[in-house]
Length: 622
Ligand SMILES: *[C@@H]1O[C@H](CO)[C@@H](O)[C@H](O)[C@H]1NC(C)=O
Ligand SMILES: *[C@@H]1O[C@H](CO)[C@@H](O)[C@H](O)[C@H]1NC(C)=O
Ligand SMILES: *[C@@H]1O[C@H](CO)[C@@H](O)[C@H](O)[C@H]1NC(C)=O
Ligand SMILES: *[C@@H]1O[C@H](CO)[C@@H](O)[C@H](O)[C@H]1NC(C)=O
Ligand SMILES: *[C@@H]1O[C@H](CO)[C@@H](O)[C@H](O)[C@H]1NC(C)=O
Ligand SMILES: *[C@@H]1O[C@H](CO)[C@@H](O)[C@H](O)[C@H]1NC(C)=O
Ligand SMILES: *[C@@H]1O[C@H](CO)[C@@H](O)[C@H](O)[C@H]1NC(C)=O
Ligand SMILES: [Zn+2]
Ligand SMILES: [Zn+2]
View 1 (cartoon, protein in one colour):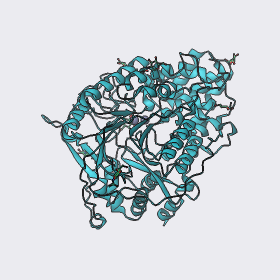
View 2 (cartoon, helix red, strand yellow; view 1 turned 120 degrees about the vertical axis):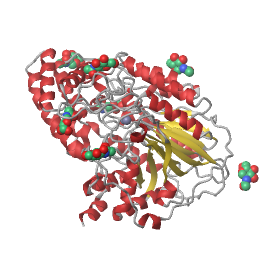
View 3 (cartoon, protein in one colour; view 1 turned 45 degrees about the vertical axis):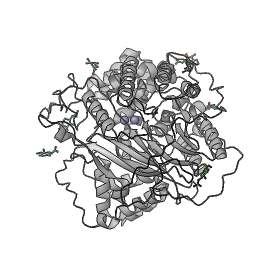
View 4 (cartoon, rainbow, N blue to C red; view 1 turned 60 degrees about the horizontal axis):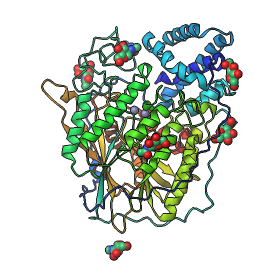
């Protein structure tokens, strides 16, 4: 989405125009050296959920009939490299144009007018959205921007990454400190003992609940989010009315769809042990959001979850859309209360405290991350991935380990290693996504490498598609060391069916691996749900074990799957169908798009594709 350029345009306006909050120190005296929570939150688990038989890859290799002739290409903007290339030139151009104005000391109102003109003339958005963006983003961005000394190319390269050039940027080079303890030598991995107890885990992500969704309103409109009574219909197309249960086009979720889904889950899966909930609750109309509006959505969403799952522990993490303006998460060195995130973190610690022990209050208040013990020997750590987000423009001023989150993570992981615990990590933005700052991602990758025998799985959302990221050793990038699952979104934004994910995790027994042993994706066919007198029917779309012929879903097996897909078009087609939750309006995926997606799957480290994807590129070049 081109929305990424707005903060940068405004950035230059305010650097010179000012209205500054004074940031004179990056000191943060918070002490991450806190004793980890050690009281287990879950009861002992004794249930064995039978896993389906491992699928035979031969049956996949036989002609798979995937009927994709009916697919209507609609969204050509696939793969973030393509999308970012556009943004990079726009970024530099916009910054240059506006800089001239600002240098001449033009008053803010006049700059607002010029900003809107550029924004409209370049067909970035229509006038309603352009002016909304200025009004929502400018007052918040203003204070950030009086401080930095880096130039246009550096800013665009920092925020957009690889595709905007690898510009030298010494102020944004930093490394976390590891403890003196040596990495333990690699032990042979245990394998899951059949019939042992397993946890059943629900993963919900990217709800994007839209309280202003209205059935019958324009589903094809000029704004980046439609299906509102006040959406501007696209004058060159015939009007498509928004469906009762949602729409495949640029729309988020009506309340009845979310409630229908939660009711179905509560009835269908009575044996869920715990829930991970990886953020992005508000809708995509970022030009028209207020703190009050987003807090309302947070409260409503928590209430919905409590009502649907009254007795099930829920572990949330924070999405980028929870901020106002979206993506704004000032690190703790922004101390002025108006600009800081305290408006959000105060409410979060209240809402999340329904499921979490009071000891997490310290870290949630400080940075909206936490660590809890699920069972003896099994820990869950929730990260605030907005501190790696490249359009969290506070980081342009100083990106060094915001809120000391990574240093705290290392502390937690070292304690876990010392006690022989296994750890699952949850968060919103996947660490290898190009929305994650290169320098942060590089540091994170080293942490995953160092603690590869402790961290058995990671779980994220944000991309809205059903995918994963394989991590490799940080030296050769050949030996798979970890796996991050990117759960499917509830929202249909854009061209999707709604969906959710179930994992089976090795449970309580003496030889437990705490590995994910299988996962299922459940969806509904939105087109059918919207037929007259119909409603959603939720069904299991696939299980990884069955569909991809995997024994235990270890990182090596996911790595093998990528290689197999690179050589087998039918297998990739199958994966791509699930990637879009079987949406009938998913875009056609050509070779370039296929390479892009396979490369994403190998990228646990962001903006490093030229290194990680070289072999894949060779396969595709032949
Ligand atoms: C930038 O901040 C300084 C204080 O650090 C202030 O004196 C100055 O006026 C600000 N500059 C602009 C252009 O607002
Ligand atoms: C695809 O387009 C055809 C005509 O262009 C239309 O009849 C059909 O309904 C469309 N399918 C979907 C799923 O939108
Ligand atoms: C950024 O903040 C860190 C403290 O978190 C500090 O050590 C570093 O010097 C700061 N960098 C710049 C460029 O000011
Ligand atoms: C309006 O529809 C036309 C034709 O499908 C399309 O090219 C154009 O991008 C749409 N405009 C907006 C603002 O979505
Ligand atoms: C913003 O949302 C309100 C409803 O909450 C609506 O009335 C208004 O028209 C919207 N404004 C824009 C610019 O979209
Ligand atoms: C969490 O900390 C805040 C501020 O220190 C305090 O106001 C709040 O009551 C605490 N909540 C809990 C559940 O301890
Ligand atoms: C499992 O561990 C418990 C306690 O450490 C021990 O009492 C029990 O005998 C072990 N069971 C097996 C099958 O090894
Ligand atoms: Zn999202
Ligand atoms: Zn997101």
